[in-house]
Length: 129
Image 1 (tube, rainbow, N blue to C red):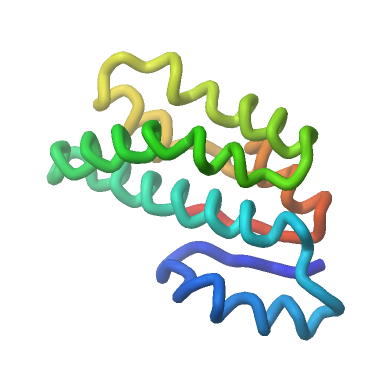
Image 2 (image 1 turned 180 degrees about the vertical axis):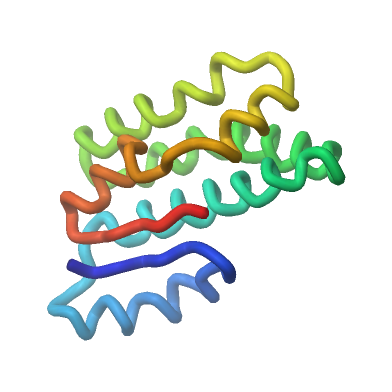
């Protein structure tokens, strides 16, 4: 299984990840989508965890992420992954207050996230923290 860990440091860029994945027998068609999703959600989780000290930064990133979701969804390589994305993004449609969204996002178990699971099925492991 190929692994894209998005955690303490954001992936330096897909150009840096590509050769690492390529050495494992080829790049999964889901690699770009999964890496982009992992990076976006990791940034959001970090901002959510800092909400109490930097609420404006979280709010700006949260709005920016919501704005970019359609572009990210369109990059999913299959209908199955787009459905997983739709399921996972339900969070963005139910919270009207940023403080509540930040709380939920910061405490979420990302291992059960539909996109994380779908990416794993395509051989791309995401770790969102």
